[in-house]
Length: 196
Image (spheres, rainbow, N blue to C red):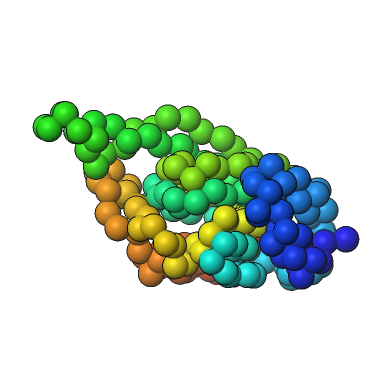
């Protein structure tokens, strides 16, 4: 049965061994989605819920509102993502040259995608750029484990505007605002009888 404190302690030990060790822990955890729900509670509200934060490890319970999308961003640290309810679509991006100076410009272009459901795990390298969508009309829940401090990273992170795909400094307040706005839309849909 999933136990939050044991999972965090196991991740603390595994993070030094690398992503493969963390991935094995995540696979074991999301193989028991009802155990995660029993321990963390039934997700009822979209948001970013930290379970552990330290310089070398962050564990977060992400709850995505129906049909929400988070802009492209990087982490500058490795990540392991495990879905325990709903669906999560990841669109992967790569940097492109802007052509004006022959160097790497601020733009990005799509480079691949992955759709995950309960029990599935994604391993993201430190240089991955991705955007995340919940494509369904119910909440999606995922455990995320980062090999560093997600909220206070030692190396500046970036995010990209959805429309122009222009690089900007990462802004956690903007990320939280996206979750709040998605939650408002979700609640409006509940009131209208659209989200079950």
